[in-house]
Length: 261
Image 1 (spheres, rainbow, N blue to C red):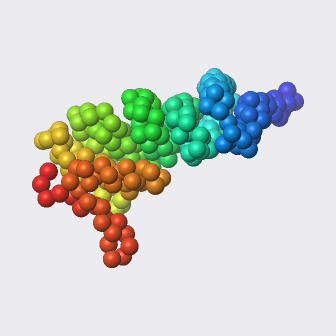
Image 2 (cartoon, helix red, strand yellow):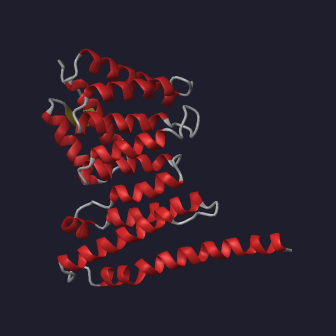
Image 3 (cartoon, helix red, strand yellow):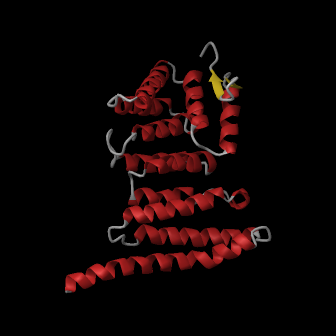
């Protein structure tokens, strides 16, 4: 009977935790959404501080075995935060890594979140070191087989190292590891990733300043499911390196590499 009572009580405690944390944020968030345009910078900064406190609470809150649920819930909160362009123009993206510290601590195998971590924290928040540190911590819980297509995480890390830190040696090693992990699979996607990653790693090993490797990395950014601002940034960087982005007769976009690296 005691065990049965505890089993019933645990979900109830979880619900109370979520409700309590949500109540910290919800009234202020609703007010902000309604009066967003009239909100002063001081008000917005206070909201950022409140959200930071909420995330710190979530880092310490016991999960009672509901880690994946908490991770998914915080990821949805991040998408709302990241997608609020009007407010982000004023306050920046400094909370991005805080969201992912919670998300990846609770569920380091949440593959989709690593791309969002790289884009939001390296490109928008200007904290590639923090993005790489969180990625490296998460990689300790990954293997070539779990989760499926985990080799992408090494590629995201390589892009951050090459494009935002200029660390070609570290990027070369990350691309090589991505190739190694992807080569364990025979499907077309994995084989393509293995080939492209190995080729990029070899270019970086021979030439740390390889334009081919840099264009390949920006092409990866361009081809991912990212927002229009990121795609425009990628096109600009590709063209600055001597590449071109053209539209084919079928209506798809194709990247043309320069004849010489």
